[in-house]
Amino acid sequence: MFKDIQPLEIDKVMRRAQEAFLQYKRISGARRAAFLESIATEIEAVGPALIAKAMEETNLPEARLIGERGRTCNQLRQFASLIKEGSWVEARVDTAIPGRTPVPKVDIRKMLFPLGPVVVFGASNFPFAYSTAGVDTASALAAGCPVVLKAHPAHPDTSELVAGAIARAIEKAGMPKHTFQHVHGASFETGKGLVQHPHTKAVGFTGSFAGGKSLYDYANQRPDPIPVFAEMGSINPVFILPGALKARRETVAQMVANSITQNAGQFCTKPGLLVSVEGSPLEQFTQALDEKMKKIAPTTMLHPGIASNYNKNRTRALAQKGVVVEAVSDDPPKENQGISTLASVAAGDFIDNPTLFEEVFGPYSLLVKASTMDELKAAVAKMPGQLTATIIGEESELAEQAEFIQLVMERAGRVIINGVPTGVEVCPSMHHGGPFSATTDSRFTSVGTDAIKRYARPVCFQNFPESLPPEELKTPNPLGIWRLFDNEWRK
Ligand code: NAP
Image 1: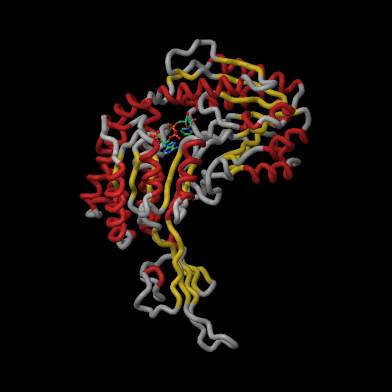
Image 2: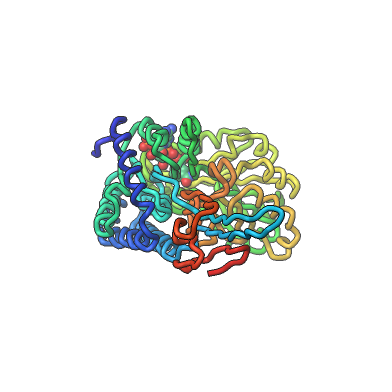
């Protein structure tokens, strides 16, 4: 058992974070990069003990956790490369034109600077990649912001082991001691206190809609509101066009069933909604999908709270008007297991029921049967913002759906053709975000190197003598970064 942080200690922690910020923000990109690389090395050095502890605390399988640890270290190294190269600061230089008439032009330059101390709430479903040294922490540290991490109560020991690795990296890389601080707190007051502390300048969160929205509201109640980058619920609709149902029924059914149930459906990108047009191809597809869902055994969920939430939300969804159970696992679930479930509903009943647009976190999906393509489009128009939307179709029918694809783009941060939304690649072109209620700010991603942009803000320097601005903005470009210099991209 770890000691919960007390309200008075929050102030101490945030003061230390602010003190660390004043030093850390001045440390070069190259040294910060070495620090991030060192965190990855130290995490790897914890070895099998880290995987064993995470297995014990989360019930996730070994192979998944080994893969997730690799992804986490890879993420840290990607941010290290990004800041070592340096162009991420988006430097712009517009040199003076003293002779311009009628008004002379002054010298103006700008670049991104770190925001200040960031409070991160570790996620339960990714104990490494979205938790202690996950993408929020990595991107904030890369940007030059100290991090205060609130450990997720479902994997406190795993979180401690990773925090220990970060502490060793701080020492080895010679970073300010409080560049990273790790706190525990079982009451919502802890989260509220951290978000509302005057030294906190931004918040990163992954979890439930209720949790993310509360943190967002706390931040907006401050005298000086701050950004909260909360990734919350998404039902990730998958639209299956009739041609694909006819041509690839079995393959699509298997692909979708796996995606719904992988790791007990505990992914923010799990396809919680399938939408298609009624007819015999859909009937045959539903039968194929039913058979596959029945064969998928129940799996133990991350923790008893998540399992009980799953049962509660699943029961609530199944009780809605017009919803019928299509298939459940043949095996009955044991304690804390989630049972794979496919339900269906007619589009008419779906469109008018906001409850059916809510995430059921676990191995559950709802098949919406539209009578026409127009009804299917009406369902899209009603949908709240999504992290992802997927369209499965034959090439010939996709070519006729340009308008539909436009409609889908308005609702989601990532649009997938002929694939599944689970499995998020970590690369610069990834966007893991989406309009509200998938996130609180659709302009930013929480996966990939662009996640750094959440924790930085532009500062503009007008009429500065050449000796004063940071290296990134000096005319000879000593760091050799890409810059927009007098409206031309130059290195
Ligand atoms: P959660 O309830 O949203 O909690 C995540 C973190 O936020 C915890 O540290 C929690 O603090 C804190 N928190 C939540 N509400 C708060 C509030 N009102 N004030 C201050 N702090 C608050 O997520 P969870 O525990 O991981 O899982 C619960 C449910 O969230 C799941 O059943 C699932 O429905 C959903 N979920 C969704 C995703 C997704 O990716 N979409 C991921 C994980 C979970 P405490 O430690 O005090 O509880």
